[in-house]
Length: 212
Image 1 (spheres, rainbow, N blue to C red):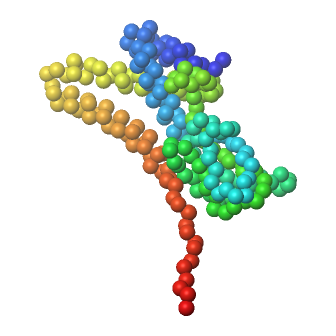
Image 2 (image 1 turned 90 degrees about the horizontal axis):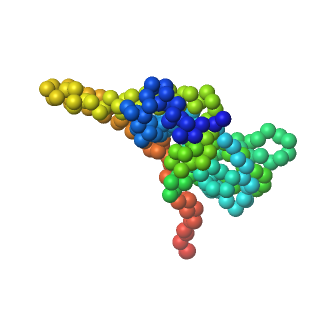
Image 3 (image 1 turned 90 degrees about the vertical axis):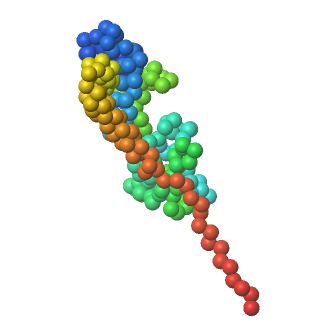
């Protein structure tokens, strides 16, 4: 049976030999969120959808309709014309506007379907208003292990000042280590978004000539 956030929290607390006293529901939930984000950066779900070609359009939105709520990246776009031949790879540019993803073809297509392969995030039922858990049993165990690590890392921050009251330099060093870990996660997360291409206007091919 696919796990929900509630059952995952219970599994994580059991694996940490805790009854919720040391690793609270709030702490473990935050750890699950971090582990899921890391999992999605490395191993998102691969999906594919068909869109009917519109001969008047170069730009197609990949949000809503048959597409998931969030598309992370586009792997490729192919022309599927149902003639029995292999799908033809098309040249395209992924663009992002209003936090939505689009593809812009380099040339107009006259007929057929666009086969679009993309990456989308895993979700967990009960986390951030999601209603579906998409991970396999093995993937869930990987997530549990990661969430245990994040839970311990967060728990370690609590006694930093209590343990090192007489040694301010140790307090600073401990916080610096924690800050480096979080800033590394931050930089990795930003990496996906800094690679996103912003939309640009079409080139104006109108030529002006002077009358004699």
